[in-house]
Image 1 (spheres, helix red, strand yellow):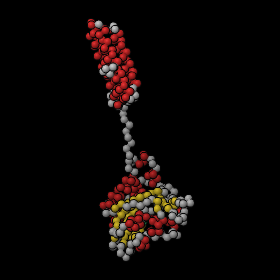
Image 2 (spheres, helix red, strand yellow):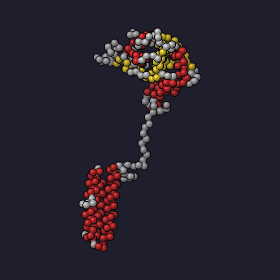
Image 3 (tube, helix red, strand yellow):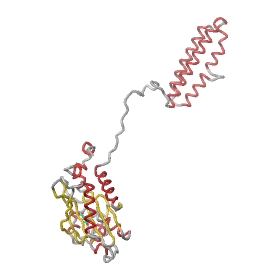
Image 4 (cartoon, protein in one colour):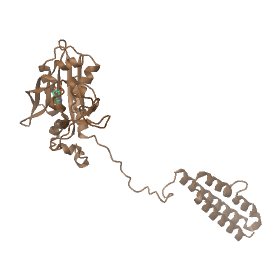
Amino acid sequence: MSLQQFVAALDDLADDAKRAFDAAADPDTLEEARIKFLGAKKGLLKSIQKQIGSVGKENMPTAGQRLNEVKSLIEQTFQATQDRLTGDAVDGADPTFDPTLPGIAPEIGHVHPITQTIDHLMEIMGRMGFEAAEGPEVEDPHHNFVALNIPEDHPARDPLDNFYLSVGDGQASRFVEGTRLLRSQTSTVQIRVMEQRQPPIRIISLGRVYRPDAPDATHFPMFHQMEGLMVDRNVTMANLKTVLRIFATNYLGDDVEIRFRPSFFPFTEPSVEVDFLWDGNWVEFGGAGMVDPNVFKAVGYDPEQVSGFAFGLGVERLCMRRHGITDIRDLYSGDLRFLRQF
Ligand code: DAH
């Protein structure tokens, strides 16, 4: 074999090896190719090396140098391929990956203003010793009405004012046995808590309620209420007013004043509407009162032994006042340009 033939064989081998490595799609195939070309005993490079004597004594140094060059070239190609397959590719090794391009920033989530408000209200009420309680949004008439002293013929039970759910025969009706409805008020949670526990009780419940109102700037078929209930011996209306005043000044500001207006709710006696003086206007935020003896009886409490107050405030109304939001629909439009402001 002449020196020329020897060098040509080495060059061909380098080309073949590169092609074989490039074609390898997984580490196993690559290893097979490595043994074929670089194997210490039967590798193709080895078999060319064995013929080095045939180039003649005077050509040996050149042939040896060439052999070493090709060997390290094939080894480098092998290493680059292995890096590509195992994901260790350095800059430029993978033509489909450009490490100099800017990354795609992940979208950072944002807490909805109503959820922020709920957290804030729980924090304020928590400092006054009220713990959070929960109840289901799909309710039965007993918890939504009966135990709250709302009789069968009361207008609050009208299908036009409630979302009755279809049960059994598929009819959505207040009169079907076992009927369910989306709760229209969080006062249901008062009953659920008192059924489970004995006084003293000091809870708030923040959650969704549902009424079939056409959406406008101040109405939405789903909204949130903050229900409060305190039951103990000798709880009075003065306690109620104090708690609500402390709440209002903490949430809306030190200069907020509170006003009670006589009203009626079946589950409280006496009952009041709760107004806060805010920016020079009296604004109604909800209702309150002293828990009606019939409600205590419905949960097995003795009205001669305990007394309590309850209140229900509109969470959207509180949130909107505090943040200067004028249309409740903006809260539920899903428009991130609006929601990101809070
Ligand atoms: N549940 C009443 C409503 O949705 C609000 C309310 C009024 C709750 C008086 C109370 C209360 O706990 O005592 O309109």
